[in-house]
Amino acid sequence: MFTFIYSLKYSIVTTIQIEQEPKLLPGDFAIWMFIFMELLVFAIAFLSYAIVRVQNVEMFNEYQLTLNRELGAANTLILITSSYFVIRAVHAIKGNNIKGCIVWLYAALGGGSAFLILKSMEYYDKFSQGISLSTNTFYMFYLSLTMFHFLHVILGMIILLAVAIKAQRGAYSAQDHIGVETGASYWHMVDLVWIILFPLVYIIR
Amino acid sequence: MLLLTLSTYAMGKLGFSGIAVVFFLLLTAALKGTFIIRDFMELRDVSLLWRVIMYGWLWIICLAIAITYIISL
Image (cartoon, rainbow over the protein chains, first blue to last red):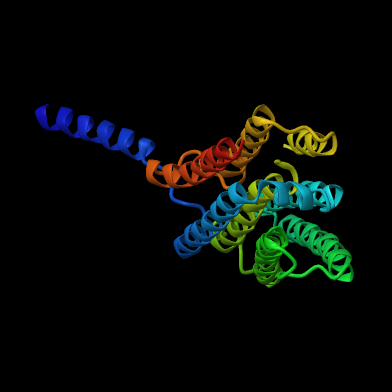
């Protein structure tokens, strides 16, 4: 009797512990180490911009007005929508809907492509006016911050494309979808960084 | 999130400035970031450590930016 009660109590305690166990980070743990490092680098860049601006407020406010806010806002909407498509891809593969996962991943890649096209148009406009990294401190930060993010969008798209191709080859399923979550986590990080970058560089004055 | 983005754009388009606007824009960015971390990255139920790192990164960045803008006034 005592043994039965003890085992019952042990079973209940174990069940509660399992239920309360926090979830693991989605995707491969290594990508999260990479994400944390990337976020640290972007944090330093954002703070550098804000601190240097304190000593050059008039210049930053003047040249910020030359930026194309419409393209910046459109790119924000595109990245958020693209991130939503990636969530749909993750949910699709969790439901063993491989075809749906592939479609949503390519939709997200379409969003990423649209971002790159709009950003390239913005850069073309600036470069054709003779603006470069050495024009002034504001443009140095504007170009270096946005181009650094631009490179991350390209890397995110390469990762998503690799995941989509693997999904087409049947590498993922409801039981094995860690690769899809890994790509998704990186893509959301790219979105998260832009959420701060856009108001900081284009809007706040 | 789309509406918050449009409100951010509208603030810039209308040329609003001042500390209240800075706080509003940073709060808007922090809220959007919170949605991304919680719902997009699906970190709602992960270990407290990871949530502290991610939310800490977001809110400390926004707070630090706000402080530099207060100093520059």
